[in-house]
Image (cartoon, rainbow, N blue to C red):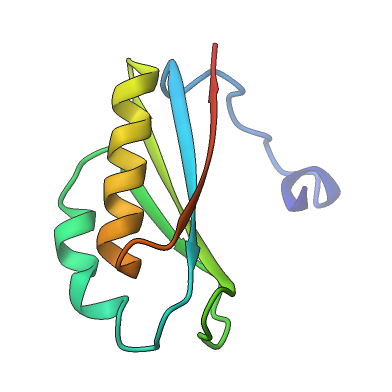
Length: 97
């Protein structure tokens, strides 16, 4: 949106992967995310987005995107990454083309 408003180049709209799955990160406690981050970020194609919100039980504090060629595998990767970060509290949304 900012690129369009500022009249900057918009970038390519091409797909970066045939399948993408997003898993929401639901807060458990403030200490649960940071120590587990290196293991999750070691999986190429998995991207973590934290919103900078204070953590409390059940609050959405971020999400994980997993890109892959295969939707079931992308779903497993997103689920595993989110579960690793939060101790299991996740919601999944997927899309493929």
